[in-house]
Length: 161
Image 1 (cartoon, one colour):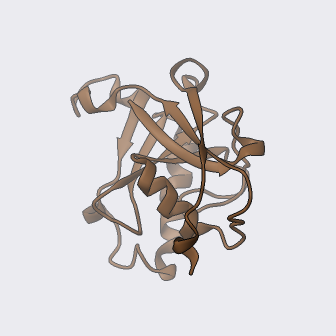
Image 2 (spheres, one colour):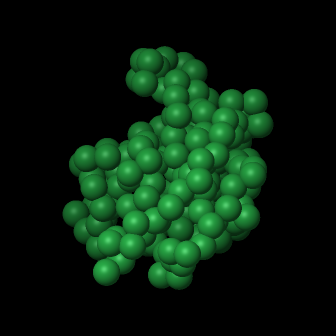
Image 3 (tube, helix red, strand yellow):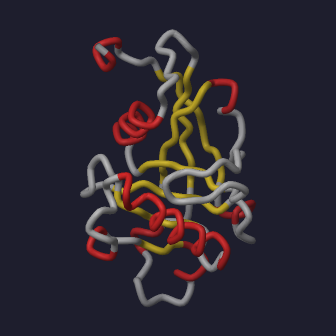
């Protein structure tokens, strides 16, 4: 399965995580965020980057991960590939700032346990669509996740007017 990540071109040549805290992880946890679609990746980037420089050079990273769509939820190998968080599993305020700490706790626990390579989480922006967290410290990261390509990504100026 392919998932997508947009970043500055300087950082698009390999799959490295910053270790900075995000909505679903704490500082010192090496997590890569990606999205199920190119358009959601762009929307997430716009919402989460106050310093987006439209004239800057950006790339869309195309990342191949295990084909989780074909995985039976009860299959034993799911422990190695995916855990899914559904919106109904989250506190009522999960989309607001007040729920941020609980989402970080959930993601931090997933990361520490390292039972699954991927955590599929609903997008705060479009709860019916999903983002993916990739645990770069998981034993299967090097063998099951790969950057299959990059595409130049140009921002449309109408997005920030």
